[in-house]
Image 1: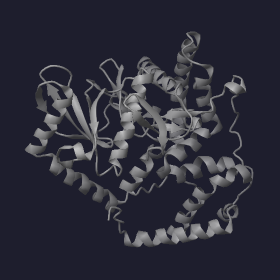
Image 2: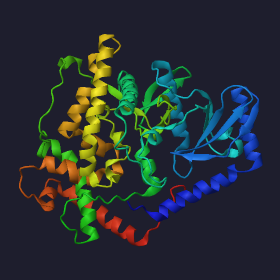
Image 3: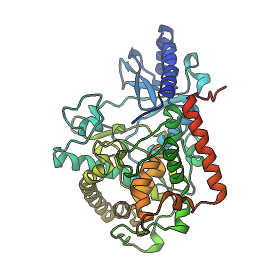
Length: 444
């Protein structure tokens, strides 16, 4: 997929300049002293920084006791670093208090004013020994390191079911947590947190960095006569969804599975949603999950989002799949059935042991989400940079099925005159920006 190279290079420049400040003897000494202060042990060795996800971290070993690590938000990828740190700490402490999900123990966290040489906000946590992450554990053997991962098609069923069983247990624990409103958990005190802020902004963070433009292999065959037509088509896809419940309700796909429990017991509060991927699960040599990392973009979301099955069961996302999104869906479904069967088995045990309430069960809702097409609606809403081609490939055909060859102009007629004027002005502005390719400096 193509990126905006100007924005990408600018963000890399920011990170590289920051790394120059970090990679000095004075910085290493100051960081080592800070880690040792909160670890309590005698330091042995501090390792060079490594980048992963949205963070840059350094590991430090001690003469006795567990190693520790310090994590800084990557300044080229994160535009709101202090917000990110506060929310991640709040979620981790909430999970330690109310679940048995394996998360790193936080030794200390601080903001930029406490950071050595003003490097930025940080978290110091215990380092979890592990063999690899789930991507490496489940990836197709022989793929080059620069290739995107894909679930090994020949993976042993026993290994996959063992891993899925652990993921099911983690998801069920998250399903038991409920909140009165949408938002990010915020620490009220060291032992208490509440939902009091807007959700963490993973999609805007990524958009800010990459100015992402996705071109789908699975877009409809209708040719574009100009860049204007393509941009206009995408703006229509963004404006139509609010009209759908009134003008063109989403019809059922094949059939909808009823939820087999009284209506009064259906979960209506907000669920803790983890925007996860397989590389955030660390496993030992026997594929046991020993830690779950990167909770900074977790928030109390509409429960419907948590009812969608995990999109990463194939490791690769739909929009990147080599055979297009239809190929992804065909490959995903049998793996999903395996996951749902393992999840149902886990739910049965917990229901019998009375450690799970019927309204917190997930398997029926996840199956319903997939079969009804709700999976794609939720996925598109959570992945804004992939919204357009998911809408045209999976949502629009369901909405307008049976309405004949409804043209874009007819769809445009569902919008108000004001909405059409705003959309056209936006399209013209974006086309002008594409000619100049000048980045706005938001910090100035």
